[in-house]
Amino acid sequence: MVKAIVIHKTGGPDVMSYEDMTVPPPGPGQVRIKQHAIGVNYIDIYIRSGLYPTQTPFTLGNEGAGEITQVGEGVKDFKVGDRVAYAGALGGYAEERNMGTNLLVKLPDAISYETAAAMMLKGLTAQYLLRRTYKVKAGDTILFHAAAGGVGLIVCQWAKALGATVIGTVGSKEKGKLAQEAGAHHVIYYRDEDFVKRVNEITKGEKCDVVYDGVGKTTFPGSLDCLKPLGMFVSFGSSSGQIDAFNINLLQQKGSLYATRPTMNTHVAKREWLDEMAKDLFDVVTSGKVKILINSKRKLAEARQVHEALAGRETTGATVLVP
Image (cartoon, rainbow, N blue to C red; front, side, top):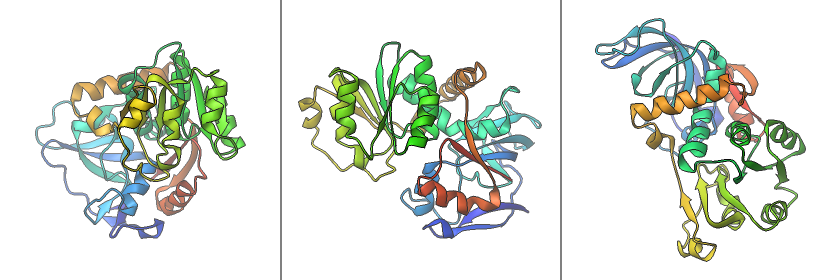
């Protein structure tokens, strides 16, 4: 028996039950992982609340790192004792778990379990945003909403290292300081300022090459007004609510803009893609160009309190759960 957070019905943080769970031997193509650290992400709230429907009961969590203790039939590329990390496989809020190897990557010795758990989902998200969805290059100007969040702090550092000018929106002076320390050249306090007007002032009317928007309802369609002609709007989350359906002619009217809604699942669907993305992420972290800020380490049993803080926008950087 192992301890895990189990959801029997979707809802608020109170539906999270810390209980015993049996983990069977790994099936064909699976491995068993003893988890050393577990990542916490905003998507966990969407799944727990039922916004992203999942059959109950289930164990929450999409990200973690640990060591392989058993391998199932047919597993060739991984062995007992391997240090591994993953993102995108539900079932992470547990001391031990089984999972298929399709989303698993080997973890370099230079990266700790806690750092891996804090960065896999957020770091791979930053990778596909900056390197695959829109390839940020030196001289680009980017706008990133919620720049002091887990993904935002990685993006600020990485985009700066790529030679881009980074504009970030934040909700408080404390978060503004974090974003600036991470590499944001300009910070906009969206609660006190009109971010569209400020972007126009900062860029002297030139606007941005790309806008990365994980906020959604409250930042759309203002985000489109921050783009130069032929710019790209990248919607990758909706912490303030989903973007309502809109007339696609809006993209034409605002400068023949591009708009996309990428997801992790698509970008890691092929083994070679996942390996390339993970290598890119590991390289930029081990080089020191991107540092992973772990703001909080909490016990797995405290997952409910962690979710309350996350939903209240009280967190910065990454939070990891330790079994």
